Image (cartoon, rainbow, N blue to C red; front, side, top):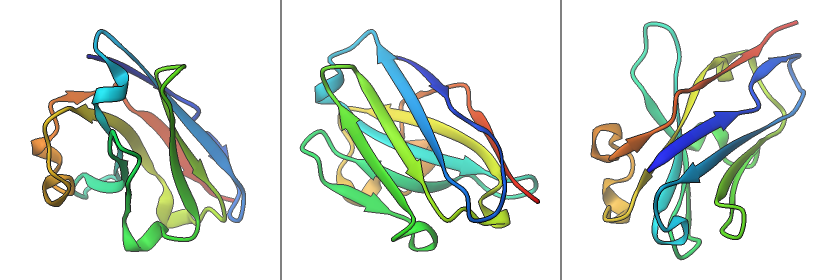
Amino acid sequence: VQLQACGGGLVQPGGSLRLSCAASGSIFSANHMAWYRQAPGKQRELVAAITSGGTTVYAESVKGRFTISRDNAKNTVYLQMNSLKPEDTAVYYCAADSTLIQSSMRTWSNWDYWGQGTLVTVSS
């Protein structure tokens, strides 16, 4: 599976961004998809995940602000980020895996495929 993430950039606090991750090389609909992020000096953490069946999982810190979605016809997963805060600044990565169970999705090393990352900077 090849993953290509885009949509990062510089945004002011309170603003919005939408990240996209296009997948190829596999049956997209069969894969669970996720967005992780990694800030300088911190561990990579799960932001949100969506299973092949559409069930979503979110980090507590982004609940109510971020929404993950997928378009199987376009082989793309999205992360809509609203009410952004400076602490959301990080490199955001998309990930894919076809075999994980939901309880394993919060561990980044369990995911098989990764995109290259896109930088999100929230600053005034």
